[in-house]
Image 1 (cartoon, rainbow, N blue to C red):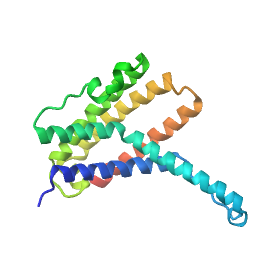
Image 2 (image 1 turned 45 degrees about the horizontal axis):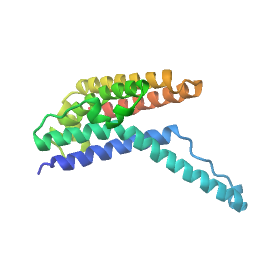
Image 3 (image 1 turned 135 degrees about the horizontal axis):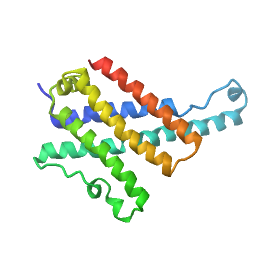
Length: 198
C-alpha cells in the first residue's frame, strides 16, 4: 500500500529535522564534563545550566535551519492537495517584507531562490512512490547524478544567502570561520546521502 502525501510530508519533515539537528550538534560545542562536577556540587549546577543553554542553542539553530524548508514543503503539499499552483513570492513567503529595510529584503530575495529549489524538490518527493525517505528520493531522481544536480543548485542558493549575510550582517572572521565549517559539514552530509541513496 502506498503512502498518502501527508505521510510522505511527515517522512520528509522527519528527515530534514534529523539533518538540521545533526548539523547543529556538529557546529555547537557541547559543554565538557569533569570529575570535579560530581565532587563539587556548585560546579555541577553551573554545568547543568550550560547544558540547558547548549540544548536551547541546538533547538534554535535547527528551527532556523528548517525555516525555508518548512515554507517550501508546506507550499508543495498545499499545491498537491488543492490543485492550485503555488505562488512563490516575497510577500507570500515573507509576510513581514513590507516593513523590512533594504538589507532584509535582499536577504529574503536570496532565500526565495532557495525556497524555489526546495519547493520543486519536495513536489518530486511528494509525488514519488515509496515507503521510506530513501525510496522516495530514488523514485524521484532515478540517478545519483540527477540528485546531485539538485543538491548543487541548493548549495549554490544557500551559498548566496551566506555570502550576503557575511558581507552585510556578520562581517567578523569568527562568523566566516563558522559559516565555512557549516558549509563544509553540509557538503559532507550531502555527499554521504548521495552515496547512501545511489
